[in-house]
Image (cartoon, one colour):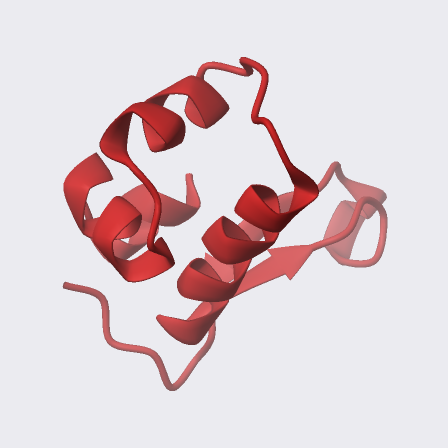
Length: 76
């Protein structure tokens, strides 16, 4: 969802995070990612591009976790 909000393809996220495209695809399918460092790289890349991760229950309707673009972000 975060990658889609930025209108990035898997290659763009991989390049921004410094990981392989296969790693991005595996992570998005819920597969095993070898290190926590890899997950951190993906998160930092997305946050650096303007994604804000929302923990479960902190916003309207006490819904589940999610992601959104910060108000001052520009996707694309």
